[in-house]
Length: 209
Image 1: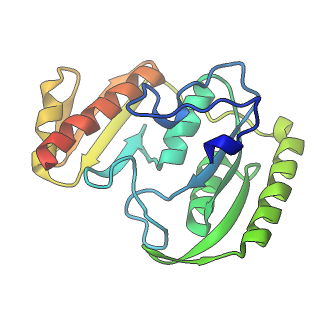
Image 2: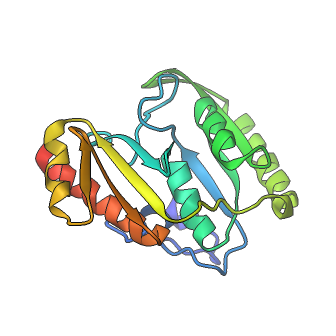
């Protein structure tokens, strides 16, 4: 709950925000912890799998690599040379995080998918215990974790759920359609590219409604 925050912390809320969940980050941060994350769209053994917008996005790829939100957001942190040192979520999300961010990342799985809307959960006290232990380990290992940085130029590919959703994004002159359901563009700056990606998803959503 917001009223339980440490008084030294601040809460950024509301939408839209230029950097979405990563709004407010800059080079003054020592590290990031991703709490309550989910797997990318199309993951069978995960809770509520989606990527940004379940009604629009089938897949997002950056430089050819399919990215869940955890990868997109870690690259924003990496833009500012801030490492992601810990992630929590279900077992499949933790596995995806390790595959993208590396084995030095501390992950804490607090549930296992039994279906998209069903989970086998840890008891609350046990989950909190593992989260505390994971946070302690992550802070101790912080110096061993490198920031997640991709190499420019950045090619963003947005694959949507229907061909109609790919139409409005192509009105942006930087964007080209490569398949009936896929648009792509390139950017030399990751943050500029991320913001354009979010705008294209919003445009594609207009076609969906």
